[in-house]
Structure formats: structure tokens, C-alpha cells
Image 1 (cartoon, rainbow, N blue to C red):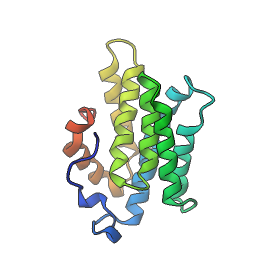
Image 2: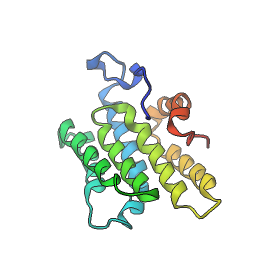
Image 3: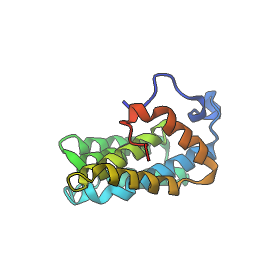
Image 4: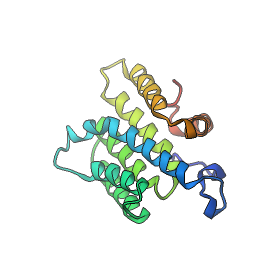
Length: 171
């Protein structure tokens, strides 16, 4: 479970009664796509013939660019999560990261899911005893990718939801 029980209005769009602008929603989607893309090779090295996680990342980027509808990006995210189900370890987490990125088009708060699963993927891929350090490096890389316009929003979200995101944002 990566979503809070009570939705944070900062991650609900203005037209739905929240305070999230469309431009910031797009930035959240693009950042989530970058987080997932950064670990995609961990999935593709195990399942090179399965395009679903890559397609989810491509679709959410296309949604952010106004090229595809939200429903298409959301569906691609769901298919990427389907690609994860029969896997274990880094490949599974990487596919879930892509799936979470894809569904940011529908629910902006999934942005942390993409980031958290990417960190879990890196931790799982690291040599024995080096997972925590690798996760912290990935977390810092992700933070370096944050656009200034959403930086404080995401960092605060990480602080608030770190406990339900496996404490991966302690970096």
C-alpha cells in the first residue's frame, strides 16, 4: 500500500477540488517516468521480450506531452504491473515502478510508488550487504532529478509517506 488513507489535496487536480495544477501533474508524471526508466534495465535483462513496462513509461510521457489520453496511460501502467506479477526481486520491483509511473496520469500520488519501487529494485539488485547503500544512492539520484516546481511537494510527500513506502526515502 503506497497511497495514504486520506488523499492529500495537493495531489488532486484543481478540477477535482484539490490544488494540483495540470502543469505540476505533468511534472510529477515525468519525474515518475524518469525514476522507473532509471531501473528498467533490471526488468528487461530478465524479460527482454516483454514490452509492457517500457510502454507504460512511454505512455505516461506521451500523456504528459498531450499525445495520449489518461485512460491509455493508466491502462499501460496496469499492464506493466501485470508483467511484474510472476517475477521476484529486482525485475519485479522495476516492472512495478513502471506501472506506478504509468498510473500517475490517473492519480498523481502514485509518483512515490514509481520512486519507491525503483529504490526497491536497486536494493534487490545490489550485491549482498550493499542494498541499503545502493538504495540511498538511488534515492539521492531521484531527488537530483526533481524539477524545482515540484521539489518541495515531493520531498514533503516522501516525509509524510515514508513509513508506508517501506522507509526507502531515508537518504
